[in-house]
Image 1 (cartoon, rainbow, N blue to C red):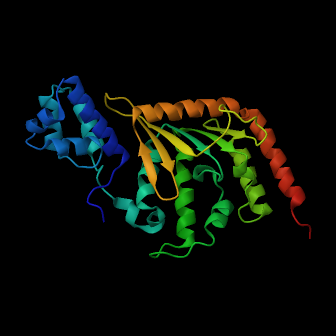
Image 2 (image 1 turned 135 degrees about the vertical axis):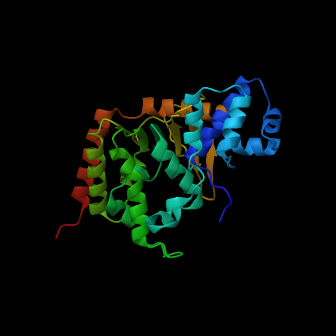
Image 3 (image 1 turned 60 degrees about the vertical axis):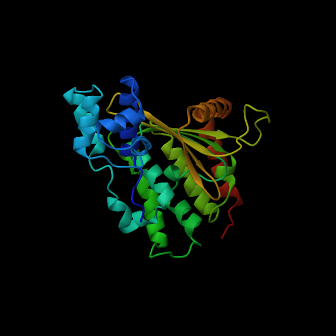
Amino acid sequence: MPATVRTAKKLLLGREIAHMIQKADSSQAEAAKLIETSQPRIASLISGASNISPGDLVLLASKLGFTDEGYLEALRDLRRDNHKRGFWTTGHNRAYSEDIRLRVDLERHADQIRAVEVEVVPGLLQCEAYVRAMHADQPEINGVTLEDRIQARLARQDILDRDEPPLVQFVLSESCVRRVWGDNAVMREQIDHLIKLTNRTNVHLQIMPFDRPAGRRSPISSPFVLIRVPSPGAAGPLELGYVEGEVEIRYVDDKKALKAYEAAWARLANSALTFAETRRFLKSVAADFARSSPTK
């Protein structure tokens, strides 16, 4: 078991620490001396990979010139319980891999999620039958069953039903709704689920059809996710990119890389079908699956 766990609150706190150091015109090495620690530990705190005691946190902030009690309480709140693994080791939550746990935590704190997908309906939009079909052939590993995997996937979608849900925006290649998981009945159920989700004001869905002209403005080359988490502090929201490959998952916070993903998102969203066109398109795909289903 890893000694440290990166969480949304730890990343937000790290941003606040970096913000305080910058505003105080100080350095990581100088900040380290203020609480009698090392520069590598300050760097680790900023990256969300280390923990800090409440006393050291307030001492650091105060010595950097941040003494407003409201701000100090915001820092304490970000630090409070941000290191605990808690629910990850029990029930269906065991189904989340170590790499995906940070994404799940970020989704729970996010106010905006934007995703581009190429082949698979995104997890936040999957119906139960689709999830079951996707995981049906996976063996039980370390006591994690098929039902655990299904419930873990569906539990992530609870964020869409909370009092203040995040704005979730998706651009999906036509492949996502044409690629069959299970059978045609499963796909019809999944597409009906997507159509229902588009009735929600916080769910924006656009399809990129196969017949969109090729060119640098339209093709979807690879999936990515952009996540924004608001901060109660002064450093502004946490913005991260999430890229998942065959052998690794990467969380991207480099400003240049994020700018490139933002530009890609804008091109794709502008080139894809509008929300209304997407609803009509989904209904036509559902009809295609209905027509091609075997008759009894």
